[in-house]
Image 1 (cartoon, rainbow, N blue to C red):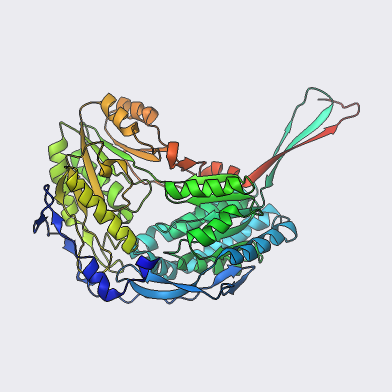
Image 2 (cartoon, helix red, strand yellow; image 1 turned 45 degrees about the horizontal axis):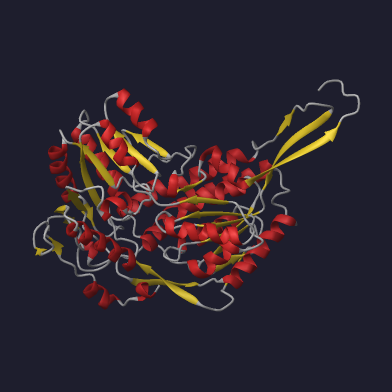
Length: 532
């Protein structure tokens, strides 16, 4: 957190970074990006911070310690608000409230239809406050306002309506037995769900976790990312307005080693869901195992291949690959961060990819037409620049970009590397930033082998006009999602999750409900049954 407390004046000095030639020396070229002047003078956000306390048992309260921490504007590094800093004592209070709400409260005893009506009312309130919520999300996160207002907040409402539809359709089975017994299989709510969400899509991840948990009749203790606590607190107030009983949803803002660890290791949390880095996911899984062996759903990192075949329409492929990588400032777990291009079209693709990156509009995310805002914070900003430097040092060719955009805030120029080899850090590790690595391949078997040669397995993209090629790749790629001639399609009904070290379990769709249900078999003897 110390890095986030940096003063604005020191920020400008610390972010000054040169472009690099292949030999590592500074260069003055490639400074032709469409950079908005709004980077220098941030636009005043059209929203005020209303909620900055913890939500416990239906009330906004200070942290037990009285501590707060600053949440920062990534456009400038300046403080937006002081937010209550929850720790283990606050988690204990929240879990106690959630446990009481589950064991004694009305929520799991409410009819499934009434639970669905509350979720639907919440979705209506989200739509009513769409613009205010979107502005808050942009202010705290840095993503373009148009993206938040036109895509993400409407998707939040859509997801809640999707899960509202499931609430009264969760049912068990009656199964035959080899003898005179009546056998029921019940699907019951699992209890208190602990949920830890990331900073890149705060409200979408809120919906992915809260929606299925509530539809199944559970209660929740949710920890927000310390970088982006504001929007979850705001929409949680709307849940109370929609009629959600007190204690059903509790929201704790705080840090991973304190609040997050307390949720993961709590003996009275019955299930845990986490979205974040693979390294932190390992810690969360260990804490869950060492406490009460609570089941854990993990949605972790990725290094997704984006495969461009030689039969592709290059102009369309360039635009799709650009979107697959640069969307959300490159801060996307499934970003198409390894762009594999067939050798016959590699040069043409590279030239057009460079031209598209140079046209990308980087600037204040509140300004209309801006495609790329700042990275989330100084730590992530510095990490991305470190990876860019390593790409140059490892021998990749820096085609464009490579340094800060403007002189204020956490903005980075859209960056492209060519001549990337599989063993380079930029091809192996998750950068989580606007850095496109373009790799050359010769044939289908080669690109399958290279695409799968990674510890991740979250997603992949395929661009081809050949149906057989698409069929081959969709089966051969060891990932949880394959997008063919599209990317980042996140319908509410489509399950999402990874193979290998990209996680375990699935979010969204019918499969996500299984995360929040227990299965119970009930066997009753039958005396002289009419049928079996």
